[in-house]
Picture 1 (cartoon, helix red, strand yellow):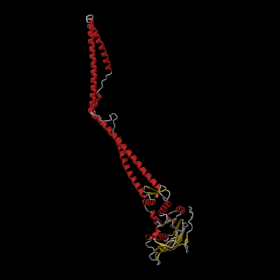
Picture 2: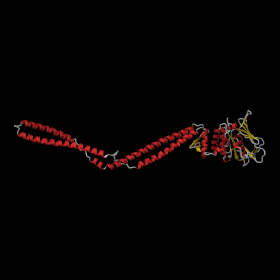
Picture 3: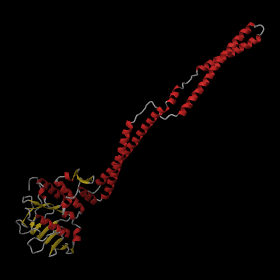
Length: 438
């Protein structure tokens, strides 16, 4: 059960002469009045009584008073807090009559609840750090943000290199007619020698045809001679005829074999040998362009991998906050800044800023069920209405000051007293705020 302020009695504190107030438990209590009447003095007295010497006003005793300040606060848990006497000594009495000191109060009094503007006026980073520390994810989120920044920086550098590589590769010349690899003069000469050897073999086979043709011609002549001597050299004629038949067969074989022979030209090789450096220049250019494109692709792949890593870290950050025990639905931290329903601090309405601040302060110490707020006059009626409704719904108590004497004020302080009250003023139940109604 969170602790709230039930009753307040103060005398001779700053501008306050004597004030007695009984507060309701939930909602917004507005202490109104004109300037320099003692409104802020009431809040300063509460902060001093509950927060200790560090909240003591520099000129705590009212000007013109010979009686030292006297403070008495009754809390909802039955504790009575007193500061009285020349040294304003603290006395804390629990319901059982036991006495305690500031250490006992610190268990259920949150320091920022006594000085809410201190939190509201802090930087966006400080607000975010306060939230992260109280929900216990500050260190982990810091590590994730550091990791995200490192990966993001690496990705940015890789992306710049990839762009440069792609631009460089795009501007390079490419020769589609050039071979894929550099050519060697020795390899070309060897190919030429192989072709020449093959062509020489073909020529040898062709010369055999001429040889067989000559043999045929000789055989024919011999046949003629033998025919003239047919009667005399029958046997020679037969032999000559046999030779003729064999020669014809050999000629036919030789002729058929030479039909399949094709000489290869060495002209292209000779041109390549003569233009080897020109060709190799094109080949090197193509190889350089291929290498540049491959480099660009590798850096692009690295960039994509780092992008996935950045997204993974960001998701881990989102999950960390989503699963955290946040004090207010819609509250988060984005890029090191506090956000509420997607809006940064300067984009929130006055009521939203108050809700966020009070929710965080309550989370700091759930035992503290009240907050003090000074100078609510900058808020219009709609903002007060919305904030009051939220406080009631959350079961929180807010005691605030406002330069006003209107009906929105729960009490009016005038010249150091509660206006129109000789006895303790009992603040009625906080109104059910409606726009335009007070």
